[in-house]
Image (tube, rainbow over all chains, first blue to last red; front, side, top):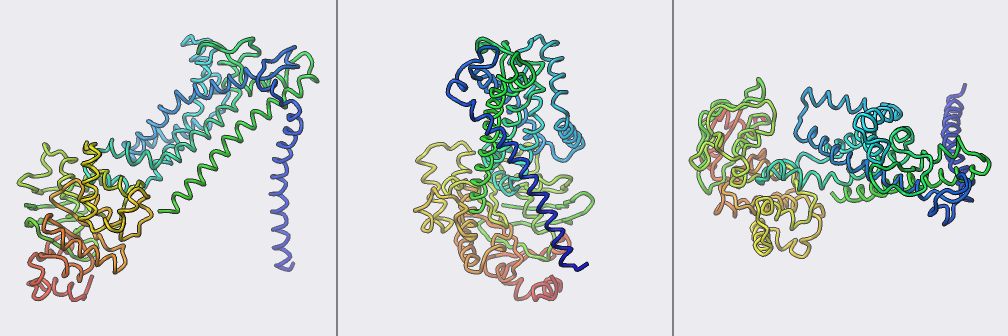
Length: 284
Length: 248
């Protein structure tokens, strides 16, 4: 066969496949927007579910997800960022650090339902927190930790060594160098990692299933030992159980839309950050 | 003032410096020359203990600054580095404003008096012959400066903490000829106040800026004398060969 025709066939095949992937993503998104948009209104965003989840809104679930994101980050950020600072700035390339790195990578690959089971065993039962915001936040924090450690490590490694030597040569201590030069330089990339993990945490269902999520609560949680509703679990509930499935369907799509909107918003923030970072680097 | 006594230095099993004995006088410019890998940069970095940052290295002998062996246990490395400043081969300003780059050394050493910091920053930029070019944009990013300006900024940054000794590791090798001559003029002026040790690959540069020159080869100090004598009438044949460009 003619070589040019071969080329053309190959490229056409590639093009068809890649376009079909995009089409699939767009159609999923379009499907949810199309079905969910009808459900979105002020009441939907600000009221509790009523009449067996067939009316009212998802406000408690939005609040619950917000609490869980904040709670999990409160635990995961200090722990993850300090761990990364240790491995990159202090650890060197020792055996222990290599083992830590392999473990972190493996932790990132553990299915989220396993984190859920672990959280239930440890936080809910052994530590006696019960099904609560505290237990759910801790479980989600465990899930987010590997991601935060990895992204922070990459961010720190991207800081040129010449900044460190320059600072040390001026008589700054190692700690001062990290605090005043390395961390500020790494900050935009660390922030990117934080936002990615916020997106991840806000969308997970399995880890909160046994540790915090409530089917329905008449009031908002008012302590860290309370249960809470959350968007992904609420969606699961709306889609799988209910007295009148037909009536809850629009509510489910609306919830999905809100959840996707939140995650997409996070990702948009990431790319904005990356771009501003790129502009900054091109000045160098 | 600065002295190396029986210095041997190893990277792992590789011996980079062999029994170096050398005295460097106050307020002079001393050039360290020699082919790549001869140990001249390693030797330079001994005096602010930058080699400490490289793993698996070992030093024998003494490095004396101000009558004190700087490798004594009692020596505070951070304090030493305020006394012995360093300028690197590639300009390495921090991703901060021009002002903050120079103020950095003062701030990390606890000077938070706004007036005195501002004054010291200005003095340092004047000493580094950069003030006129940057005085109207002190709060712009240091990355907006040209390579030569960045290197003079790094010199200003080192001067701000009032060191006695300035170590320069090929400070002009990444710069264009005009910037290079500016740096050389600067070195000339700074020697009235500072003891300067400069590593250079450029023989003409060594001849132009230095009072004394040390020729290193294969980790040994081959010859050390007045720059004039070294370039006109060296004692050793190896020095003669290197200076006239027969190898290196």
